[in-house]
Structure formats: structure tokens, C-alpha cells
Amino acid sequence: MNLSKAEFEVECAKLFDAGGDCGRMIGNCVTDLLETFRKYKYSHSRLSSQLILDVFVSLAKQEPAMFIADNPDEWEDISELSGKVLWRSIICPSLFSEDGGKTWYPIENNIDGVVCEDVQASEVTI
Image (cartoon, rainbow, N blue to C red; front, side, top):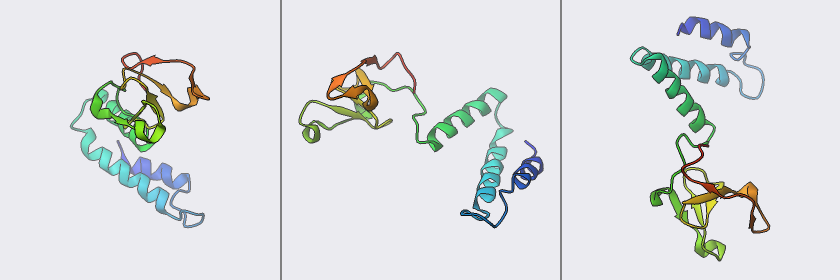
């Protein structure tokens, strides 16, 4: 990765401009992230570099970076709060389970307590 090329693009996009709500913060943050990635990129293959980027982007967007599993350590029992047997995913808090994570559903699919579609934990990545 040529950092000067990346800095040029950030500059062309006016991300270093002092105006706006964020001032120069966006341009500085982007170049800091690029510099950090560049330090490690050369010790990785093209494939592992892409995997690093994929995991980073998922985590930066507060999305899960791995499979949702039925590992009890990844599920929080919220039965006392909900008044019924219910677990919430620690990895992705919008996922709920009534059987400890063996099957789960996103909260968007639970309408008035009716689960529209159960999903096997081993079938899907988020």
C-alpha cells in the first residue's frame, strides 16, 4: 500500500479540510488506520490481509466477525428480565434464542411474540 497515494486520495476528497463538523479528524483517522494496516500488511499474504480487513470492518460496524454459535459463553440468559425463557447473543445483541442458542432469531423477526423463522446456529453467518 502506497500511503502517499492514499493520503493524496484523502486530500482530494477534502477529508483534511478544517471545515465541517469533524474538521480534520476524518482525514487524520483514515491515514492513521492506513498507516497501521500498512505496518502489518507486508507480513501477511493477500488472502490474510483481506481477512484482516473483513474482520476489522465487521467489528468497526459493530457487527459479528464470526459464526453465531450455541456456545453458552456467547449467550446471556435474560429470562428474569423478559419473564420467559430467553437468551440474548453477546456477539450480536439483536439475536435471541429460547433454547440457549441452538436456534435463534433476529428481533426483527419476532412480531408480537411470534417467531417468524427459527435459524439453526450452524447454518448462518452474520
